[in-house]
Amino acid sequence: NGDNPNEDEILKPVCFVFDFAPTRALRQLSEYGIGLSPNEPNPENAVKELVSFLPVLAYDGANMTQIDAGGILDIAMAGTSATLLARKWESALLVNVDNDTLRRILDNAEAMAAVERIEGWRSLGDNIIETIINKSEKVKELKNKAKDKDLSAKEKKELSDEEKEYKSKRKLVQEKLIKFATRIPAFMYLTDFRENTLQDVITKLEPDLFLAVTGLMVKDFHLLVRLKVFNTEQMNQAVFAFRRYEDASLRYTGIESHTGLAHYGLYDTVVARE
Image (cartoon, rainbow, N blue to C red; front, top):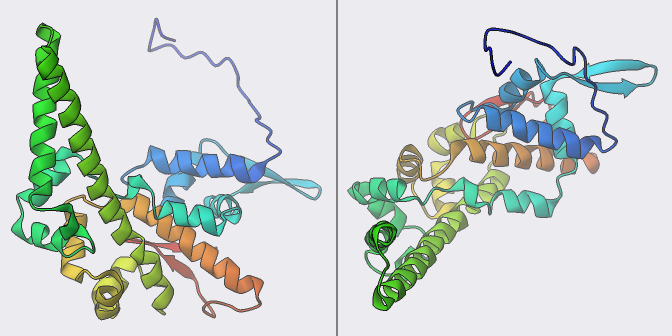
């Protein structure tokens, strides 16, 4: 009750939502559940918490059965095509290029050295990060000034030019970081360890392979992750989708990817296969 927060009034004690496109509906449900728990590294736990309040029932022959979080994620991922999977690794959500993140890189000499080792970074020119920060701050100042009084024609042109330039440069930085991220599925495909988290595989088992495939050393990658350059929650989802897609593709041909596999390794967590 908006007028009295201490008063409860249930208008709909029971509500059923029917959907005849379950893959679409459960994909939305899984994305919503994961989105409600951005700090939860395990997507299965995030969805499990949601379905404890919003149960999902499926008609199985003559019975209605409740689907658990693992089943929901299975169905949600079932319609994932290779093209959609590739888009997950090309998503702008995988990387952060806001001013706060760029400042953290700029203030850390090791982080600056790391990003300069990313393929194509040097083609962006010198002081690319400083330029983005300075120009975006200048645009912010001009916009604040415009609130108090009208800008001159010269200032308006300067504002427009500066805004276009820093947005263009920020986009270029984002593209270079995403290009690096797209190398991770190649590393996952080549490595033979499936039950470990990707983080463990990188750090403990095959750091040399990671360097060969991505061009970045393990310690550099972890430093950038620690500085929030890469979004670990989104990366977990992308790894999760890739693992399931790879396993389903092999099973379709009659090959088990790894006999007796019990868990999928994500970026920094492990979830049960079933």
